[in-house]
Amino acid sequence: MMLPRDSDAVEALVLRARQAQAAFEAAGSQARYDRAAQAAAWAIMEPGRNAALAELAVRSTGLGNVADKITKNHRKTLGLMRDIAGVQTYGILSDDPATGVTEIARPLGVIGAVVPSTNPAATPANNVINALKCGNAIILSPSPKGVACCEMLLGFIHAEFDKIGEDKALVQMIPPPGSKAATQGLLELVDLAVVTGSQDNVRRAYSSGTPAIGVGAGNVTVIVDETADLRDAARKIAMSKCFDNATSCSSENALVVVDSIYADFVAALAAEGGALVPQDQAEGVVARLWQGGHLNREVIARDADVLIDRLGLTGRVPQDTRFVVVETEGIGPDHPLSGEKLSRVVALYRARDYGHAVEITRAVLLHQGAGHSLGLHTRDPVRPVQLGFSMPSCRVIVNQAHCFATGGSFENGLPFSLSMGCASWGGNSIDDNLHWRHFLQRARVVRPVAPREPALEEVFAGYWAEAGR
Image (cartoon, rainbow, N blue to C red):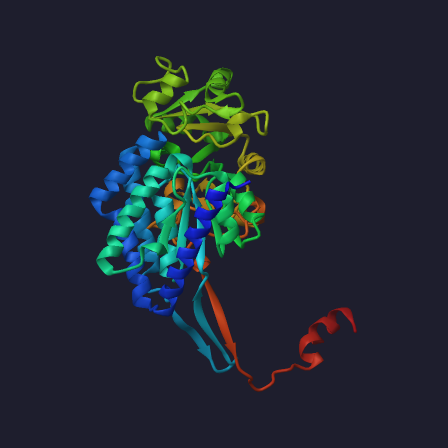
């Protein structure tokens, strides 16, 4: 149960947020909403602040690396600002005389956002910007390791708010050290719960009684077929797998390679710094990567040299190794390599042919990561669409570095986001990338129009002709 002081503190946060949001909306305008969103974006993108946030994130969480977090903070926020530029989130959205319906943009109110330690600056910034763009207030609940980074981010946002005269109570966080009880209390009091991170948090959000958006677990599986450009595929996979030490839920976790190009692709991976661990040596890696049934915190999201040392691979892999490729066949709870590894380790499956590769990929996703995304490196234009029709996945990423593509890219049409909905496959309420539309609701003014009631023949003529009356 929540302690009284936790309950009082959370209720006070929400009350301040409600008062601030009501004033924000009452005196709102598109210009004001946009300016607030821009202030929050510049708070994380200003180079000195970005660097400070990235350094603190790595120092306090032990996850990822500073250079890549700087890149992530910048590109994810820049892409989001591109996506929302010119988007109308205030006022009359449409007025259709034919239907008599006028649609008006309305904020949701107060958003409660639970954010993970893997991206302790980029994810909350993304949520804050989307919330403000749509006229909402937002309260953040960071993971324990992400508290310091969230505090710094809020300090930067509030400093920008001082410049434009905006109410700081629009963006708040649960005060440290926080607790599960305080987070649960927040989820129960707000108007929308948005949860990125542990599936336990997602389930608690959905059961909180508050409308909720949770996102599913990632366990990206990528097929490399016999038509693929092997060098290009290996380069993109290596780039994605190594970025921020594989903290992204969109980082490749399994590669499924058809037999006819298997040896050539392994060689292409080696040229990109991917060291192969044969299947008969995989057990040693598994024993060090998982301890007591959990991922080893001394291994996950670490630099390559630390990873190699912790996995006992020093002297057994080339000195220029950037990531480790472990051969395996097993899939399921008794085969940890088939799940998410949150490290520079990727499982490698050998498929007889493309059809077998699809079967393996389906089995891996149904074990873990259903709904999130899969990848395909191919020159065949038909296969990606077939996967879209048949696989339990909301996204089929074609010939791209997966962790850069899944959450939006300047080279594809997905919205920039750090939270990917996984639909019914992943137990989620959304099937797309979390973006501004999820932070907005609409009121409809409905007027009478001339009646448009069809005759039965207009509706059923075709059916009657085929099936009879």
